[in-house]
Image (tube, rainbow, N blue to C red):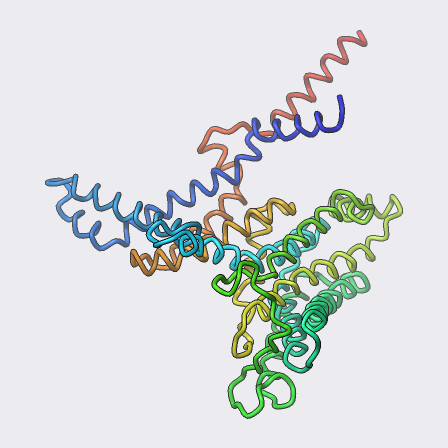
Length: 408
């Protein structure tokens, strides 16, 4: 049996045993709970529920209209707007989804890679802020040729994020400091450091302004639009997709990825096998932070604006953790999870504007997805999915029984 056949059998086994279906059913469960919340907060549903027993059809119709209308608005705000007059306007929501997903792809990859090495990089906010500040400073402080200016700003941002994450790796390797505590503290350091620089003339503050805001980036340093000026999707998406391919190659095809996975599985055994675990921690956090830095760069250079503030990360550093968890710390899974959350972010505003659905409900749905992903036994019990570990154990016992019979 060749390698492709064995790989296909593994995929089919994951699907049939339910492990690959857990994220799908987790999303379905979260959407069901979201539907209950949408109906409960709808004014028409509340009004018709007052006389439910005399005219139940009115209440059921109101529930259907509230839920279907909200999710239709979610789709039209995230994928395609059927009410638009032409195709170019109708496809704009999809480009908004891709734009929102761009920093989530890069940030999620950074967190996922650290997960695979057994590290919990919760410092995405600080790494994004430092990367965005470096890239933004290069973007408005220099006057370079178009392509050169953009590449220098991009590389500067990646280096800034990598340095900020590398500090965590060095402390982890040299002193054994816990990366969660260090990254949380460095988030505060980065936030207040950037806030101070944005209020200090001559550093990041715009000349002649009293607001904590940077000058606008030069046009040569702005990421160009992929589909033209009428759409928001920029070349940060291309870099994020390239990062997905690079991370996949590192984890699956490279010797460094093998060492990463070995350390993540069992650092003591990896150390006995001759792997320098401390060095792997430093390398992993350097790469992880540079990917989160790419998310920060796409935020600050993705659109022509009037400058950036200390809120440029927009909470994406923590959303990246959610994306990595939903994607099961795999590059492809993280990409798909980022697209899903980008759709929620783009379509949520449409739900709020058209159907007066609180935007917090979308956030609750996202949180519930992660909750159900983190509790696969709950999802399996609800949908009667088989436990892959039990099937694996049964297979091992069967093989041992056959082997014992042959020996006898």
